Image (cartoon, rainbow, N blue to C red; front, side):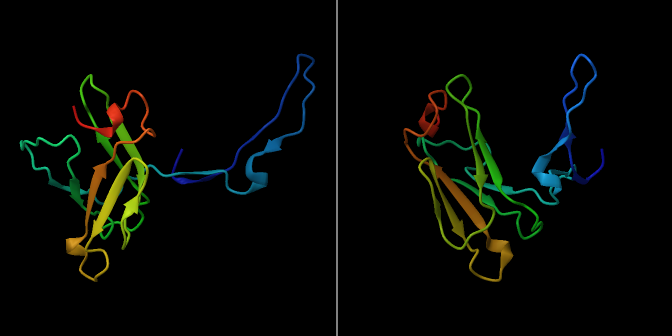
Length: 143
């Protein structure tokens, strides 16, 4: 399949080969789009720095936004590998805002997005203790 918009439909066929009519997804409008191209830009990690140490179980994770280089970005996904102590993933983090984004499980602080200089656009994500975390997600904390 190539990158494009696709439509789909389905019908039933019984053992006597009688067929139902097709049921069309989304009443015939575009059902899904295939996009195999990778984003043109990759976020640049800022802190904590490689090989650094922290005593915080909820440090701020900061990265330079990739949105200025690729305005087709729709969100970020953040993952923590806690070994056997409860990994977690945060999906749907907005790519650019001029105000903070506060949810039940994390706070994303958007720095530098309100000016014309895209070279200083950073996002800092900090998790929060919350009952919204799944039981296998270590309450969104590092172990």
